[in-house]
Amino acid sequence: MLTQAAVEAFEELTGSAPAGVWAAPGRINLIGEHTDYNDGFVLPFALPQAAYVAASRREDGRWRFRSVDLDDTVEIDADGLVPGTDGWHSYLAGVIWALRQAGHEVGGADLVLTSDVPLGAGLSSSAAIECAALAALADLYDLTIEPMDRAKLARVAENAYVGAPTGLMDQAASTLCVADHALFLDCRSFDTRQVPLAVTQAGLEILVIDTRTRHSHVSGEYADRRASCEEACRLLGVAALRDVTDLDAALAVLPEEIGRRVRHVVTEDRRVQDSVAALDADNHAQLGALMTASHDSMRDDYEITEPSVDLAVATALASGALGARMTGGGFGGCVLALVAAEQAEAVGAAVTSAFAGAGHAEPVTFLARPSAGARRVR
Image (tube, rainbow, N blue to C red; front, side, top):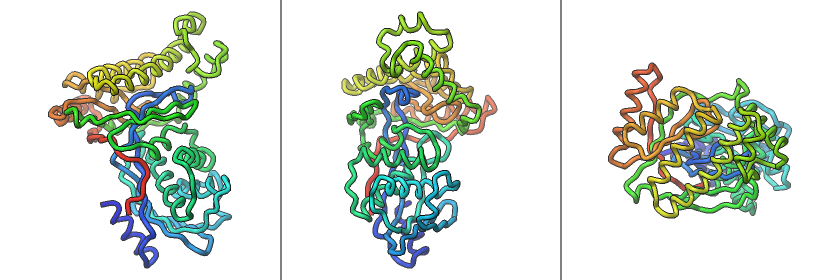
């Protein structure tokens, strides 16, 4: 139990019990890839896997961070809150920095971290850490901060302190999600809606297949896709691709490759909205079809998949999945498959067998049950 592990590590570090333990989950995106920076729509949900932070106030204005998983401790004072600082503790220090930059009075604290959100799998392990730390510090220092504002502060920590140019989806999902629901997020207005996603009640499961192909944007592919969207907006005279209302007319005036990028974003926004409608109608077959169409679009138009995720999707579908798609920024990471509960084990085994035959590393599979966002757990 990670809560107890955090408590025991805290007691070993400080000699006393923590004031509390706070948790925030990783997230997975049911549908809606590369729509966030185009002012579009996304539909993530929170995972059972989470980051846990045991914490107490300190009165000396210093912060001590302990990672149970890395067996490492770092201690800093206010002079050590420097954006761009490397190290695992920067996700914790960045939250303190963001809170103080926003005018919140945050004093010293001991924070002990442990997590079971897989690293590098596109499941937002960093956002989970940030949102758990923010929940802890807000309670320790009696800060009144609305949930969406907490998500925005956690994003500031990631963008401005850590230096990762993420959108708001990760932190919003980790903060706002509720159990058995997906979070419909409008990335322009930041309006949200909780959409029922009680798949187990429908005899279904969401099988996650971690291909263990670690996505990397070192090649500049992510930046290239974003630049294509920005160029399309310039050519079309719109603020964001969300504003393209006549796709055929847009495609007629755009260069071929840029047009394919635009077609993905515009049709993906529609698929997110159609997925919400499908869930409202308990039409899981339609949801599955939309997931598969999303993957096809990422593969053919946005060109962000790679052989292992394509194999996982194809194998899951051939094994009876209602739908399957890569999730995340692309070039590796995880695949989601919507499957009948009684078929989940067989679908996972089929993908494992296919990977062995193709010479890929053995994938890791687990069931993703839509879970609650950031909260105090002790």
